[in-house]
Image 1 (cartoon, rainbow, N blue to C red):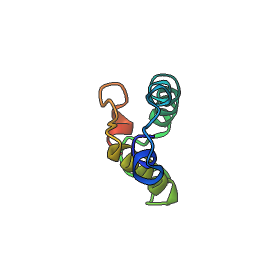
Image 2 (image 1 turned 120 degrees about the vertical axis):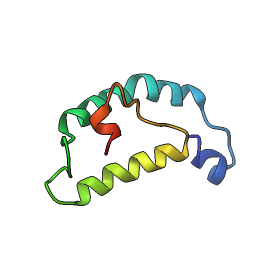
Image 3 (image 1 turned 180 degrees about the horizontal axis):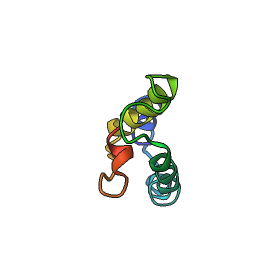
Image 4 (image 1 turned 90 degrees about the horizontal axis):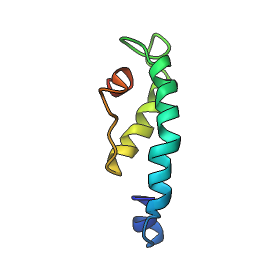
Amino acid sequence: QRVINPAVWRIAPDEEVVARTLAADLPGILDYLEGEAPLEGYFCGELSIADLAVAAVFRNAAFAGYSIDGERWPRTAAL
């Protein structure tokens, strides 16, 4: 919404969708990842596509101005 809509589609982001995603959808996803994230190292022991997939999502989220709350999801924030 915040990156692709203005840059590609030349339309304003739908901030209602953004707010709903941040408040309702994302916390559950981050809760799940927090339970799956390793204390150290990688998801599958060695660097794998799983690590790259998660990293890519959060790198793109950073472009949109989102950062993980490290106090609520410390293991996920450390990935």
